[in-house]
Image 1 (cartoon, rainbow, N blue to C red):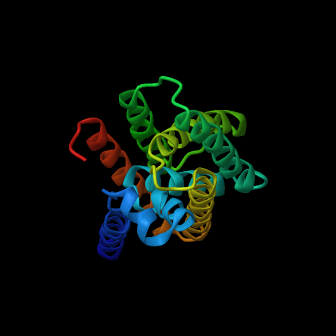
Image 2 (image 1 turned 45 degrees about the vertical axis):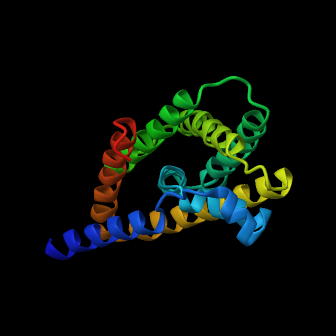
Amino acid sequence: MRRIKQLTLMTAIVVLLEAAPAAAHEDQVIEFGSFLGGLLHPVLGLDHFLAMVAVGIISAYIGGKAIWTVPATFVVMMAVGGASGAYDFGITSAFVELSIALSVIGLGALILLDRSLELRATMGAVAFFGFFHGYAHGMEIPTVAEPFVYAGGFLLGTALIHLLGVLIGDISHRYRAGTIALRAVGGVFVVIGALFIGGVL
């Protein structure tokens, strides 16, 4: 039990350090170019990173074709949301941020409870959350970036994070200790999402 607690703590720390929020997207683009700047955006944004990992984990829980259809739904709706955010359809940033925080809480809760929704319900929720994650990315496209190249980068980054989540979910569910540790990580996701809503993060 002690080893499980240590594993859970180490995993939470790694996630927090790896996904520290980025403060200057303009600097990323100037330093790395539009594509790599876009690629790093979801990786370095804690709220985006956690939700995208969670989507991958949950798709692995469901199994079968959900392993690719659920993440693909997120990516497609993220592209739609990104285009909408870039042209600013009038959705307030507060509502967008709330939706993203709720995605971290909701998806984290599913991991914590070790449950998955029916496939269509899961895809509906993922489509909703994916749109608002994309909208946030679209709103934040740096002025120095080439928009389509930058968008290609953050969509690829999203797909890679989903793949990471699928691998984590698949491997963890093969071992009892891994399942327990993953549920604890889901609880960490829920807490972090609540901190986003509370304005702490």
